[in-house]
Amino acid sequence: MLGVYLHMPFCRTRCPYCDFVSEAVPGCPPEAYVDALVREIHTHEGDRQVGSVFLGGGTPSLLSAGQLARIFEALQECFQLDADAEITLEANPDDLRPELPEQWRALGINRISLGVQSLDDRVLRYLGRRHDADTALRAIEMVGNVFDNWNMDLIFGAAPLEAWAGTLAQTSALRPPHVAAYGLTYELGTPFGAREDEAVEEDAALELYRTAEQLLSRWDHYEISNFAQPGRQCRHNLVYWHNEEYAGFGTGAYSFLNGVRARNPVTTADYLAGILGAPVTPAKAGASLPASCDMPTASARANSPFGKEESLPLTDIEIRLETVIQHLRLKAGLERAYYERRFGRTLDEDFGVALARLVERGLIEDNQVAIRPTAQGFYLNNEIGLELVG
Ligand code: SF4
Image (cartoon, rainbow, N blue to C red; front, side, top):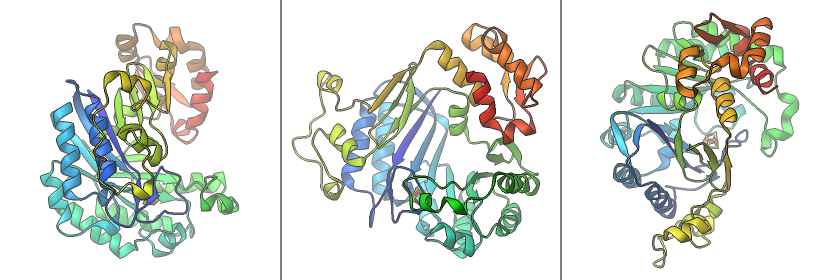
């Protein structure tokens, strides 16, 4: 089954560490952006069965109920949404209002991913977040009262470091169905990029990671950065980790379909211009759809209004390599029989030498039924990829 990702490249303000594709807007996302998303979704008309939908960003919780309804209507028209599909909306704690969780559920959303990041005000200030810990706790309560499937995103490595254990202890007491814990990075091109000297050393980062493993030990640490209660693994992210097909819509969204990895334009101005067929600057993006914007014909499409900014056909061996690397992010690893069924070749035929090296280095274990990352392989996961690439 296909995964569908919808990117919402708008936030109320920009967090200084963030390098996601997003820009600040004062209110709801511009209507023209929703128009473009709906139009792009309609380019995929067909009968594909969809097992998961993920509205990520940016800040999808800025979308009004009407805008969300338009997006879901387009999805229903163009895809076969599985009756059991996981439908996730990313939300910022400071957007939560008491009426919103019920509205979201009524639209068919059945999973909320909350950008909590920390439950310590000092850390939230360091990260430049708009919310404080009390706001996050209120948001968690509102979401938890309506949804039985929700996630807390957390960040480790932000000052003061000693706050991390406290946030984890509180998280554990809150018993979220799912927790994602990522290390803070100081990305070039962001305000934090100029503060790289504040980044924690590798050893200290590893210590923080191990603290998460210890304090969240009642959750299944099923992927390098992800912890879940039984049955609450993120099915959409599993599509990526299993290297299965997904369709991405919106600014900068990636797709992987028919062996081709593609990416949409990374600025919203370019995305809107491509989809709506005329230059639309972000400042004008709130304006309604120009009357001349008819659906492009197939030939116009080939000339690019829906053309991807990047489009890379992968070779068979590249797909097999990515499949192995992605699976080795998962505690469950990769079953040999599954690989043979999917590709008609054995793992040893394709990667036997590299896998033997990884076993020797203690980064994976191989019981001949499946290969799995060891604890060391979780910490040094990049090394696995490098060894496989050769
Ligand atoms: S961290 Fe989230 S809320 Fe902050 S700018 Fe990035 S996408 Fe927006």
